[in-house]
Amino acid sequence: MSDAHGVARDQLRSFIERIERLEEEKKTIADDIKDVYGEAKSTGFDTKILKKVIQIRKQDKDERMEQEAILETYLMALGMIEGPPDE
Image (tube, rainbow, N blue to C red):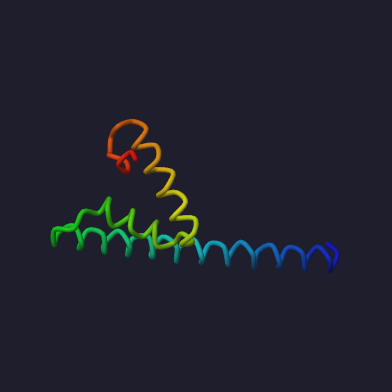
């Protein structure tokens, strides 16, 4: 086997091992997050709402405001909320 194949094999092995370590870390972090949600739930918090709040906090302010405006428009059109009084 040529030296180039050996180097490529070593690089490949290195990439695979790094990915495997990162996947394990990702699993550990996911388990930790699950534990925190469980702790929050046990103290009376609604985990669905917590997840929604986290999703909202990740959004850009302008993007969030636009989505909220569209949602409000749709809810008004369906009669689910009252709109501004007619003039």
